[in-house]
Length: 88
Image 1 (cartoon, rainbow, N blue to C red):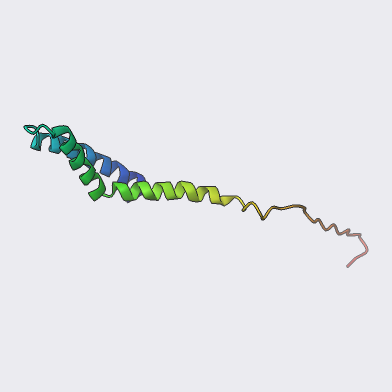
Image 2: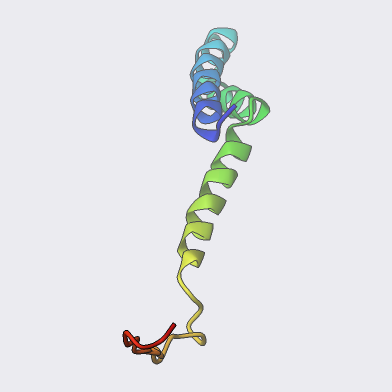
């Protein structure tokens, strides 16, 4: 499963956990807090945190495509050869 689809799945689990947590603790004074905790638990359990870390790592690795600061190309060397019709 790709990271984006894994993240979408985990966000769905977050929404379901939010709803389930609210239904489960609706009579408590801490219903909003408990529902957010339930949603975070389901988000992490279904791979949301791992998908976020992987996507962040890919974004950071994308910047490494350019050469490091100390290794710049300073000049090009071009070799030109002439061919005349007399060479075999």
